[in-house]
Amino acid sequence: MQLPHAKILLLCEHAGVLMKYTEILNALGFFHVIPCSNFHEARRLIKMERQFEYLFYDGFRCVASRRGELLAFRENVANIVLFAEVSKTKRLIMSRWARSKGVSLLGILPRPIKIHQIQDVVCPPNVDRK
Image (cartoon, rainbow, N blue to C red; front, side):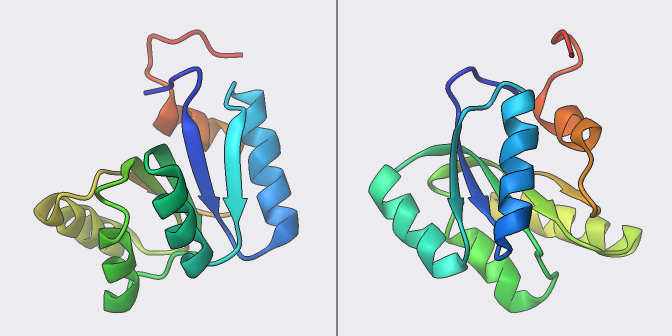
């Protein structure tokens, strides 16, 4: 669900990709984007900012330690979108895991990122699209 003043935490270790995400999100009407380059920085920002509507997490790996990282965000982030190269089976496993742990996982999107993929996840079908 797109909110006009939604705060977005953008986690990606590559500066150039962070800029590309910001450009895409701005094109979709999201302007309060807070980029960070690692998990520890993201945790610090969560403590400072308190609540975020979205967390976009690029380069997510579907392993137990990374799933544990998502638990750290569940209280302060309303919706999580992961960008990862995973099979359909792993996406299904992650979705089930997220539901069982109370993590609001909107989707796991493949890379490279395309604007329509993000738009499909964060904008309801009844919203006018550019």
